[in-house]
Picture 1 (tube, one colour):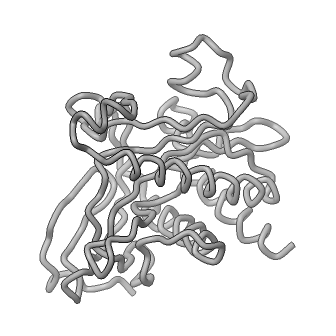
Picture 2 (cartoon, helix red, strand yellow):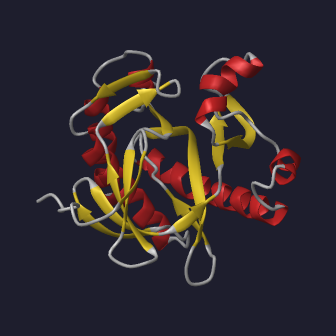
Length: 245
């Protein structure tokens, strides 16, 4: 059954989610949309079922991370597309973690996609659609007042810890975690704790089949490979089956 959101105040509608004021002052309601976008919204399409499967995958991964000491904004699942979350002040920074060369990293440095990197790379990008979410370094972030240096140290440390937890989880499911992006926020109540926010799903990760290299993520939409929802469902089923082993 779908949650009735008519009595919640609409706060924000983005490309892939809608945020509402939650039932309590410091809580929000986040609804996953079926909209798929790429290239800063230049490419857009409705994919029925995408919101539901992304919510399920993200909930699975957030719950796993919570069990292993990573604090997240997730409170509870309300329905197939909707979750109840803690209100946070989001850092205007995306944290990108890379285990292999792919996408913009490959283009930027002329490295073949799939090449294993000598060490895990953590990058920051400035969350600003009008500027194309440019890469930004520590001194630029602090100069613009986007975050303090101790916050960046914390975001980097948490991102690496998340990567260390997720890589073997996906590998047990026959999936290589190539790269992924994270968002963090500071809890509005009670103590300003930094929390993992937004989602972790095939929309925000590159996921390749360990045997064939087949793409199981948003690149299927970006590159017109087709069978996007089927790939997302495959990821979820593999994660569920992997947990049983």
